[in-house]
Figure (cartoon, helix red, strand yellow):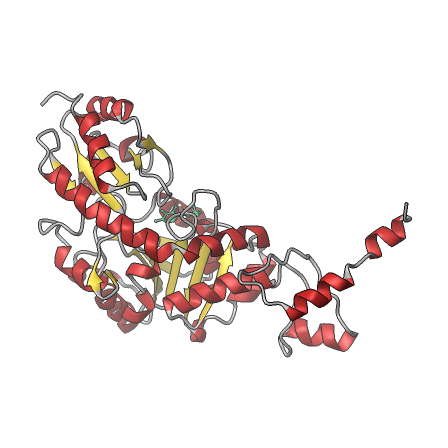
Length: 398
Ligand SMILES: *Cc1c(COP(=O)(O)O)cnc(C)c1O
């Protein structure tokens, strides 16, 4: 038996030599916490940013950088970092770019936790107000002297309203404010908000970006001129994620284009099928001509040069919560899951999940009721998904 010292020193140098002579076709996971510095001067230059190189995993590591760089290119952004969750990417914006006394304008249709985060940020002296971004004139007058940031979602939950990112970016900039776009439902395959003038883009990579339902992660991309504090804030506040998770998301990203293309095509078929169904009272999908943002969506959501409208489809059944519950019970192959963008089609019921704490009047303002169901279309064939829905809907009274 080699003694303990030998055990930790055994370095398979032959393997290292062979690796140098071969090029792996897929990226490696670099899980080392620390990197060996050649000298005090080398460590100093690396940590100060004068020399590229790695010293400590939380500051920077190769696997996270590989994923961030890939995402940066997909978005056509100047800079990008990956974070431990979608929410921590938003925390990074707050901690790195805002200060006490700043005000933030929030689209009234944002992801619930985004609004909650800004409620909690009040204790740091950061205030927020809601604005209906579909009314451009209202947005124009909503800015005040302390407004520093406008936050919108490319495609909102659950009514799938689409933001006019170009117009909203122009208004934000006229008011010396930045605009941050939550692009989670679109992904860079369908929309690259930076091209429309957004300063910052964030995404929950937990959803369609990774697409396999096995990692929680966030992405923040932005322009160089406001990026200064972001990398140091990421490291200091400990918002980084693990190399193993980065490696999984990189693998997920490799198939993002084909996954989303297939899901968009199926979602269109499912939306058309539901529109014809006698037991469905309304369907909300930006690909349908009747959707209030159909024209805008055709312009800003594109895949391979053609309009594509995403993998989310929302519909309503008459009969409120009890009808929705009956449908959910009878949908054998479509599960009620608290996430979206996974391999299999899943559904959510906003009244009991994302909009649970709101009252029926607030539901009405959001356009939902107890019978609203939101589908996340997966990789099954559209025939299979429609047939599953058909069998479930057959259990409802007309
Ligand atoms: C899930 C989600 C988030 C939060 O992301 P996490 O990865 O769960 O922290 C933010 N915005 C939208 C639109 C989401 O769907």
